[in-house]
Structures are given as C-alpha cells and as structure tokens.
Image (tube, rainbow, N blue to C red):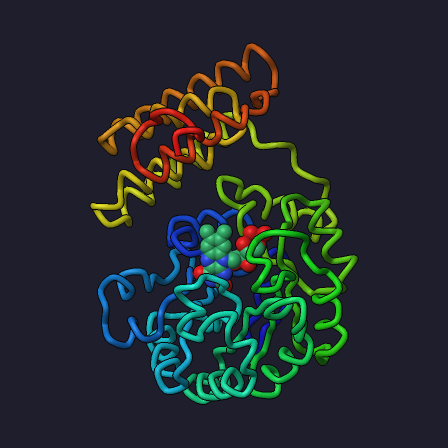
Length: 365
Ligand SMILES: Cc1cc2nc3c(=O)[nH]c(=O)nc-3n(C[C@H](O)[C@H](O)[C@H](O)COP(=O)(O)O)c2cc1C
C-alpha cells in the first residue's frame, strides 16, 4: 500500500496509543510485520514549547522503516510547527488526531471535537500539508462522528482529503461511544465509498484476530486495518496477518520459547529506553502483556506488582517463561490457563492502578 509517495507494503498498521505505542513497542510490532506504526499522540502545544515531558517521547524508529508521528492540537500554525519537528526526527508520515474522545483533549476542542468543526480541521490539515516537504504525507485519524446525531465520517473525510490528507483512518465508533458498544462498520464502508480510490482508507476498531481482520476488510472494503489493544503482548498478530496477505499458511501459535525471546527483547528495549522513574512501571506492564492468558500469568502479575525493583521484575519474568517452557515440554503446546474469575481481575486492575498489591475487593470502594 502507498500513502502518497511512501510505500508501506502489506500488513496491518499499529494504532497510536498513549503510553503504549512507544519505541520498544513499535519496534517489536515492526519486527513482526506491522506495515506502519504510529507514535502515541503528542501535544503540538507542548512539543513546540519544548516541554521535555513530550519532546522526550518524540522517538524515531530503530528499524529505518517509515513511521508516523501523531500530533494533536487546534492552532494551524502550532500544528504546522509540530509537524516540522516530527519531520526533523525522521517521521515518514505525520498524522493528525481527530478522534481522541478524552475530556482532557476534547475540552480544548482538539481530538474528536474537531469532527464538529470541519472548517477548523481542514485549515489544520492544509497548514500541516504546506509546512512539510511533499515526500511526507499528512494523514488523519478520525471517528464515525461525534455522536448518534452527527455521523459525519464520510463528509468529514472528504473535506480532509480536499485539504491535503493522503490517508484516512477511521475508528468506527462515535466520540460519545468512547470504547463501548459496537464498531460501526458501515461508517468505515461509507468513507471508503466516498473517497477517491487513490486515497487509502484504514478500518479500525476491535480487530483481535485474523478472522476479525478479514471481516473488517470484507465488510468495509477498507484498504488496510489498524490494530490497537490486541497487539499488546501479541505482536504475532501482525505476523499472521502478513502471512494471510502474502497467501501463505497461518503460522503456528508462538511457542513458549518464542514468547520468552520476544518478551526478553521487549523488556531489554524498555530497560534501555524508559525514563528511570517509569522503568518499574513499564517493565511490570510489559510482563503483564506477555503473560496474559498464559498458565501462571495471574499469579505472576500479582507478584510483579509487589516487587519494588526492576531487576526483580525481570527475574520473575525469566522464571515464569522458564516454567512455561518446561510445562510445554511436559504437557504439550497448551500454555493457556483457565479464565480468571472477575474478582481476581478487579484486584489485578486495582493493583495496577494504585501500584499497590490488592487490599480488599470491589465492595470496599
Ligand atoms: C490505551 C489507549 C491509548 C490510545 N491512545 C490514542 C492516541 O494517542 N491517539 C489516537 O488516535 N488513538 C488512541 N487510542 C485509540 C486507538 O488508536 C484505537 O483507535 C482504538 O483503541 C480502537 O482500536 P482497537 O480496538 O484495535 O484497540 C488509544 C487507545 C487506547 C486503548
């Protein structure tokens, strides 16, 4: 697939996700076949002010593959300046966030709020387009609309393309839906029907498997699919989708040894790149992703949230994957554990949020 002059090949795209789509995560997804990865959204205001909190997250790519930097804001001039900064660090694509539903973003009339102001949104796209060299395409990530009463995805996308967008990604939910309810495949299909064939349309929302991927493509006619949450701890989804696109047989599930190697690589990148004060949190998070659903994973996560040292979390991960590999050798390939009871899930979430191991349960709240 091409975005303007940028050839990204086949495969699925990794979605921008705040506090998730960092350099280590994007690298792992690229290595497993993601056609394009996006950074988490970066505030154009904060970037251009030189806020270290945000400039420190303006990371390039380790692979040399094209990657997209996503920015959000509403002042065309500031967005243009932020886009130039993205180009300076080597962004192959600059993406504009027009889909974030979070109040902290929409209250400033940014993110999904721009879908209610297509004129402002178009001015932003035009300013960013003008600020960048022609070789760097400008893209837009939007939603199905603001709410039930304003399902304007197709009309909005048409305006963005007229202003200079070279690709439109659509998360098929309204801002009012947030992340709840079903994805409106029809909204994505309508965007595809409306835009010229030369402009790729990317479908997004709830794709968790190869079967979901094929359904999304079939139901919407989209040119590519973007995957977010399901990629956490599962970069193999990109490998599987690439195999399908290449007409190859579906690879087998990753073995215990492969999971061990990939977690270890991801953890090593985190240990190298994470800010020292975030290291413990990031290592626990990485381990939680790769152990989800696997035998002994719930117990591992409880223990890792009680460990105060990064090295101890790494040690727990090593021991976990060693046991998993032994289990695979003696019990065959079944590495999964039975579903975790809801109360246990709540306790885990509580521990993750507070950084403390569980005390009590939901009734305490
Ligand atoms: C933790 C998290 C952070 C996100 N951050 C961003 C973001 O920075 N920019 C953006 O456009 N979308 C963001 N999203 C939305 C995703 O890009 C994607 O549209 C959404 O999760 C639906 O895709 P999925 O079902 O494959 O996860 C975020 C989603 C999650 C779960």
